[in-house]
Every structure is written in C-alpha cells, then in structure tokens.
Length: 242
Image 1 (cartoon, rainbow, N blue to C red):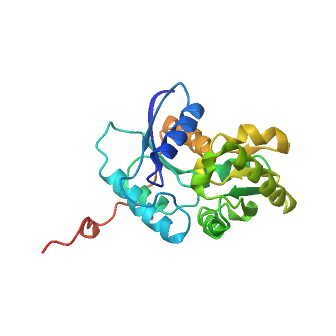
Image 2: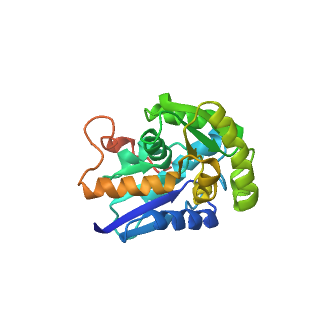
C-alpha cells in the first residue's frame, strides 16, 4: 500500500506533544504512508478532566473543519478517552480512528481482559465511559492512574517508574494485556513490555495501522444514520451575527 495520507490530531495545544505523537505515528506507519500532525490553535494546554475534554473536542473539530492542507485519507484522533470521536465522524468523509477504541480492539485480540494505565485518577471514569461507548468496555479489567499529569510525561524515567507501579494494580485486577492510556505515553511500550512480560498496546500505533487497513480495504464511515452529515441549518460557527 502506498500514498496513504493520515492526519493525526492532538487533543491539546502543546506543540511538543504533537511532535512526539507524530514521531510515534510515523514509526508505526507503512513505508508509503504520510503522517500530518495537527495542533489545535485554541483549547486546553493538556486535557485532564471533563471540562478540558469537551473544550478539546470542539477545538479539534474546529481544526479539522478549517483545515486547508493537502487532502487526506484518514483521521487518527490522538486523545485517549477524549470526546469528539462521533462528531468528527459526522464532519469528514474518510475513516476516523480514535486511539482509545483502536488500542482496546487490538488488546481484545491479544488477551481475554485488558487494563489501561493512564495519567491522573480523575481521568479514569472518563476513559471507562469512552470504552463503554465504543463497545469494548466489557473486556476492560481496570483503568488505573499513575498520578502523573499529561505534561509530566516528558520525564521518561519518572513516567516509566509510575507506569510499572500502576501496571501491577491493573494486572492484579485481571488484566492480561495493557494499554497506554495517553497519547503522551507513545513509545513507552518498548520500555515496559519486556519488564512486565505481557503485551502492551500503544493507541497511536494501533490507530495508524487500523487507519491504513481501512483505507487499503476501501472502507470508510457509514453516512447512513448515526454519522450522516449534520443538517445545514445547525452548522453555526463563530459568534452570532448582529
């Protein structure tokens, strides 16, 4: 497969995190795939909690709505547990793959139950809800926080140590496979997989490979029913006129 172009959207405004996510996406992509990273011009600096998540969803949708770069074949949404997935599927006419959903689907192919290791404990409920909405919550043994916020993840040594401690809790709850519960953890699977002795799934890599597969199979989001285009009269952007 060659010539596939994937847009990867960061869920926050931190450009350094976008660059790290794009590095992980390119490492997973096939030789003919181009990865384009998008950083919202507005929204939260890091998405941690319900309010951040809703603001992030609107910012990501706005970024895609106003995108004027080269045409793309798929969208990867690199915000673990963040809102906006369904709205983007209405907005665009190419496959949309959310890293939360992608990682869980692949984890379900590798073991009976999986666990998610994420950032702050406050994000756990939000991730659980996202997994349920995607239809993969039943196989989730636990969602466990490391106690680190998103911007703390730049400290690789500290992140790895916190991940391993949280992973023990997830495994004690019955997880046979682990999922990196934040796009900022991309690349960590290589460091912790051997130490834990079980598969560790990176959502960014999983989403990129699934996006490539959908494009290669000529499949895209159904526009019959749930993800049909929004009614034109409801497309109100910007401040009210007058």
